[in-house]
Image (cartoon, rainbow, N blue to C red; front, side, top):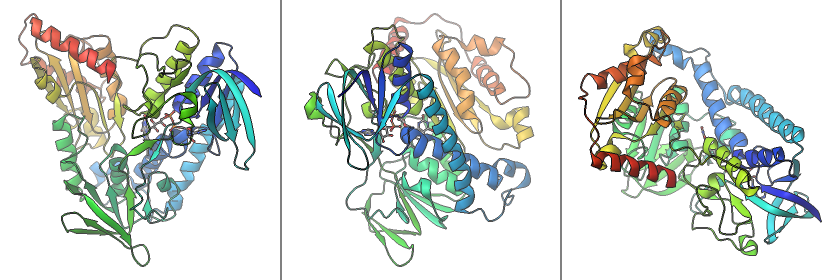
Length: 484
Ligand SMILES: Cc1cc2nc3c(=O)[nH]c(=O)nc-3n(C[C@H](O)[C@H](O)[C@H](O)COP(=O)(O)OP(=O)(O)OC[C@H]3O[C@@H](n4cnc5c(N)ncnc54)[C@H](O)[C@@H]3O)c2cc1C
């Protein structure tokens, strides 16, 4: 039987970082991956494919130039599924090669196959040919991630009725795409296809989009989507999905209405990939969505030598946060110092246009009764925005009235996922409005929006000391973000 200091199950962002961190401590590390190649959901069906597809669509469609040349502008006519696939495969191969090289350089061993616990220190790995290998380790990191929720009532066929894994292998472009579920994944794909001039209908049970995003932002975003012809049906539950001749589908709603399309993307939720892990044998349990509970500062599970990180532990389920969780888990497992996960982390939503947020929304600030002021900058007010031909996009910043501390940054528009990091730095360094007012920004940049939004807030800001109530509310917010 093979023996290791650490066995990591799953080679996505959490598993990868845990393995490399442990290897840097000179530990013997094995990564077990049941997929055909290392990289996890992030590289093969999630983050990297969807973002590559997005970039390809924006480039080929000439989306970024339409502000200047009009909605009819196209960089390439007749874009095909093959055009989209080409760039995808080159990017994914490159990502896998880099990861394989990282593992080799750090002497991390890998075995291809599905791992299952036999007892708390032993796993069995079954490869695609049915061969079985047994391995034992002192410590484990479970980084098995999630898989799309596929209700038995939905007739998935991988071609016309798809989940988010299938869409990566698209062989044709739809004329009318119906997206079930206004999840981040659902809306990212809905807007990507809409940028290709595909007619898109989104069906969502809830009352709106992205409950964790500032309402002013989502209102503007929804308006933007409707303006370009996307149909958003909120408060609608799907009763059945049926495929007829060819690619024609009918989606019947609980209220009796019907939606027709020639492709359906079902993007309503994901479940932890714990069902075949043999959790019973190692003394662990999971919740009804297959997720494992951990201590949120060390990522240790209820069984002390077993850690879990990444999507398998639930919120926030991002590649970015998964990496940090994996690294911290490996540090804790081998008694090495590690910083706790950061107080505030950015959330990037790669829709078209993109959204990125950090800190408190205006709704949260109000709920906590923290006196605040907000400032807004529209991208079309910046010189960079004029140069780029931007008509939409804005940044909103929220400041404590009494401490002047930055409480939240909310951006929708071009470059949002990059711009947010300026706000993140100031927020985590406990900076105030003064930073933005007193510093010089490159000109012409979209980052200038920070100064404009700060000045907008500053114009209305009185100068006072924080009340005990505000200080307590701020402290409470910090504690809550750490335990979320
Ligand atoms: C369409 C889509 C778009 C996304 N976009 C973004 C984004 O833009 N930004 C962002 O930060 N995040 C994004 N995410 C989320 C991101 O992909 C996940 O947060 C991240 O991949 C989670 O990493 P992980 O390490 O938990 O596991 P995963 O990446 O899910 O990998 C888990 C691995 O474990 C393997 N595995 C499972 N069970 C076993 C077993 N029993 N034995 C061996 N191996 C096993 C699986 O094969 C898989 O390779 C997106 C997700 C999706 C689906």
